[in-house]
Image 1 (cartoon, rainbow, N blue to C red):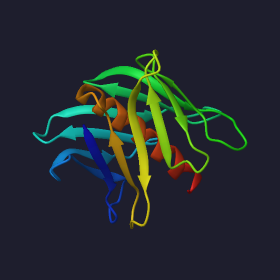
Image 2 (tube, rainbow, N blue to C red):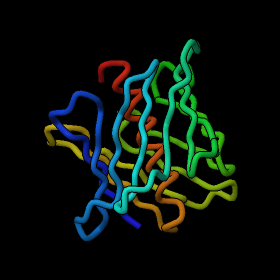
Image 3 (tube, rainbow, N blue to C red):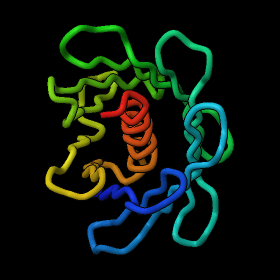
Image 4 (tube, rainbow, N blue to C red):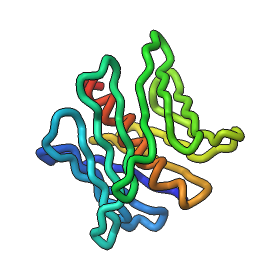
Length: 157
């Protein structure tokens, strides 16, 4: 399943529209006022399906990932000097990013590709393409992409 995450340009808080392969909006993401980043995700029918919440007062950025009101994992930024590094504690997955922080691959414990997250360039706002071969992995991969983008926004990138 392919998703296109597009940040809205003119909004008080971070908000995104997520499009499927047909160009239809399948998820809406809205940031809310809180300490740290907090995003709530709704599906096309208006049901809340997920949330990303940044932990505050931590040395390095950490985001808790919720699906269906239940915490399913955490993504943490690691201290590195050159290549970005995140630790993903969710479903036994690992994440690896490129040096420019534009492309990420999420792999299962057995090493199979769960999702590829790629930043698209030359847009007015942040746009990421998320390719998840298994449709059930698309929402968790979307939540990981939102956390990565929020961490980059915190640095002013």
